[in-house]
Amino acid sequence: MIESEIYSVVLFRDASVSAISKLSVAIATTLLSTVVTATQAYAVPVTYDFTITVTKGGLAGNSFNGSFSYDDAKLKGKGVEELGIDEGLTTCLNYLGRTYRETDDTSYPTFPKLRFEDGKIAQLNFWIQPNQRVNWWNLPGWEVKLSGPLKGDSTVPNCQKR
Image (cartoon, rainbow, N blue to C red):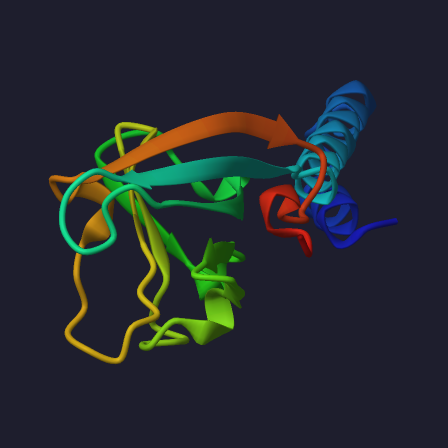
């Protein structure tokens, strides 16, 4: 018996509660525990590939690609939400011939962060340069295109060795 089942059985030891009510509560508790456990055990990572095309500045004409993965069970889908390393975010970026991972972020482990607005991806804040952090995701001249979501694999396929 799991802890919640034991608690339910002990809770209704009072003789005034019929045996059918006790059984109903025990069954309901077992079903609820099973649903919660199954939901937690089968959370599936969501992976997006992205491509950045630079249209202005010193890197104009270059394209870079990357991926990020996260557990969508961590989101409520309302308002502004952020997922980071502590919530299982993984990232990678192929930039100027090298692959960078979340541990390469200049502010790791505080960053990178993936920001959502009402359940939709708004920005990936991932910075690998030694200079001041820049929000390149929404920067004019940096076009970001997402492909995905891909479910069922926590790897980052767009960042395999090339």
